[in-house]
Amino acid sequence: MATLASASIDVTKIDKSKLIDGKKGKYLPLTFSVNNEVDQFGNNVSIFISQTKEERESKAPKTYLGNGKVVWTDGSNVDVQREDSIPTKTASLKTPVDVEDDLPF
View 1 (cartoon, rainbow, N blue to C red):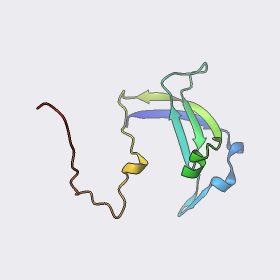
View 2: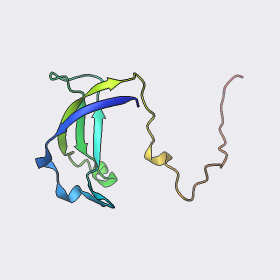
View 3: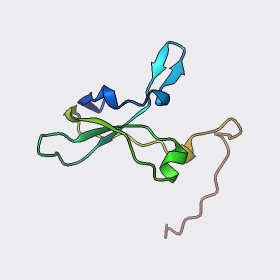
């Protein structure tokens, strides 16, 4: 575990159409933004309802739900898995990749 954050959200701002039906309940996809600097209240975490790719591309406004703060960290960061790097069923993980380098050694 690299970081713990504590936050509060305004549940009155939740758009019920954004809820996703799951096997054991309804879920709300959220995005947490952790900033390097704290605001005047000591907060450095912002919480938004996650946007679809189409919403991001159309620059739709984000629905801000609340904020919080990092309360503990071990000082390390986790790597981000980019959407374009997620393997698909047709992709082979054992396919070699040709890499050209111009290193002098």
